[in-house]
Length: 105
Image (cartoon, rainbow, N blue to C red):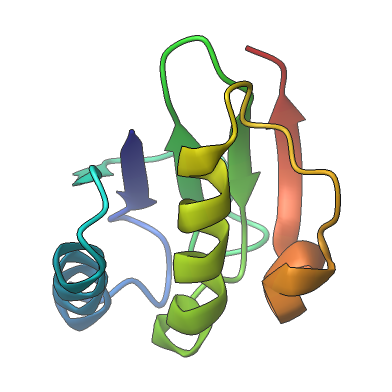
C-alpha cells in the first residue's frame, strides 16, 4: 500500500509527512509513504493519495496532521478490504468529506 502527499501543495509540511510516517509505523501497517511534486488537487490542498495494486485508489484533499486519527482508521480498513472498497464511510469521521476521487482498481 502506498500513501502519497503532494509536496508542492500550499500548506504541505515536512512535519505532516514525518507524523504520518510515525503513525503508520506505530500502527504496524504495511504502508510506504512518499511525496510527489503535484497531484493537481491545488484547489483543495494538501492532496493525499492512497492506492494498492488491484484495489480502488482514493484521492483526498484539505488534509493535515489533524486528520491523522481518521486517516489511520481509513488505512486499517483499506488494508483489510480485498478490493479497497469500504461499505461504510462513517468511521472515517471528517476524512470522508475530504474525498476528491475514488478510482476503481
